[in-house]
Length: 93
Image 1 (cartoon, one colour):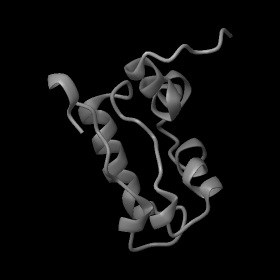
Image 2 (cartoon, rainbow, N blue to C red; image 1 turned 180 degrees about the vertical axis):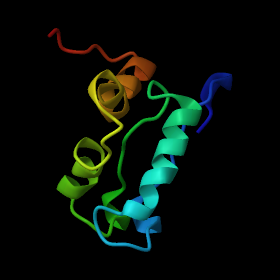
Image 3 (cartoon, helix red, strand yellow; image 1 turned 135 degrees about the horizontal axis):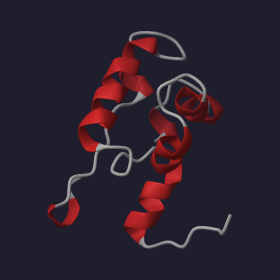
Image 4 (cartoon, rainbow, N blue to C red; image 1 turned 90 degrees about the vertical axis):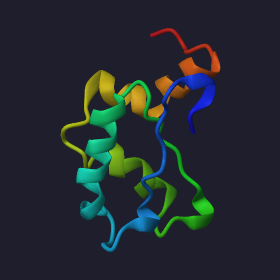
């Protein structure tokens, strides 16, 4: 998706993996995507109708199995980025 001339990235899904959860063959591709676009423009999401895993595993793939994606970068990928893009208010910390 590339709305309004700005680049946002989506498209790496566990359904593309040749391996079982945690889909280690996708990890370098996810990192390449995040490195190329930056964590503020990579949005986590899932299409449960096509996933070879549970919703929980879709989440923990990012939150527990990508050791390089931590802290504020993880926060942006897992929801803050899409909230900012859509103009949705975030809860105050």
